[in-house]
Length: 182
Image (cartoon, rainbow, N blue to C red; front, side, top):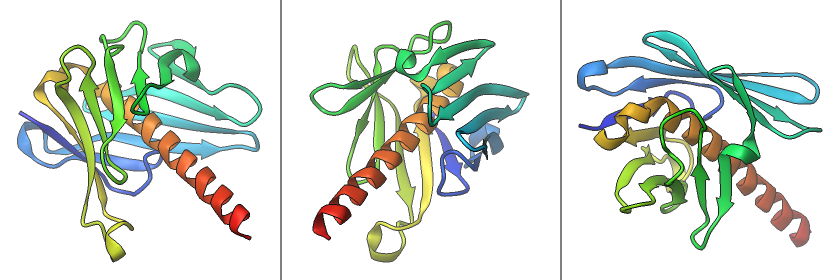
């Protein structure tokens, strides 16, 4: 069984996330972000049952933090970047064992979460209806395989974080290319 979640907006930090069918059709999660002068705060909430999964503070002047189950951790404590294929590992202490799983890029703008022990697919993201010229717009889909269902909250949270960081890095690279071309 696969849980197919559709982000209603092309923004992982501000989107309603709905199940596209199956037993749990309807809104499953919501990501909302508020901004202040130096901090953005993203709240990931589950809708059924209603609860806050995590809060993320994206700080300009300090290290980013994630609060999960009343415990606050630095982003660098839960994400390990690098590796030969540019993978990002997500580890949430006190949560399900995700430390062996790693997000990897898989094609243009797509990510896959693979089990570090056996290489099996845990989750993947892709876009529906890629839009003009094949790369603009399109609904973002996150599919969680049956082996990841027990960790769905943490998989959605780690995807939101990794997708946001991937987009931020792409914007930074594009700005560098544009400034060097000028």
